[in-house]
Length: 134
Image (cartoon, rainbow, N blue to C red; front, side):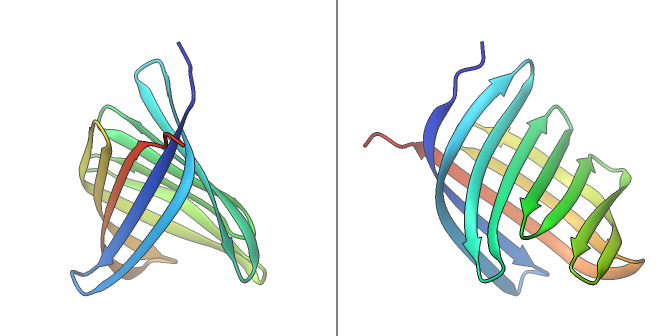
């Protein structure tokens, strides 16, 4: 059964346990098979970015489209290639997921990130969400 529910989402990204970015948005949550999906939009200076976060057993995927195009796949303890598209070119990214967990209302992904082969740090992505009962 694939029912979408409106949710309030809090996205917190910490890089190397130092820099932290936080975002609060409204979006939708749904299930398809054993996969769980969160979808939301954020408005940046460059324009609107649509984000889809997919989490399944031991793997996840973050897709961003619109003003920023990015594909970040994750599989526990594996290096995977992705891409980050900018106006001046597309860059190859790699991720190495150390932790992928989903519980009710919470998604956590801990991963090492590199772009064009250069280490970009260890990212700790924590997404909490709850049904938006307006």
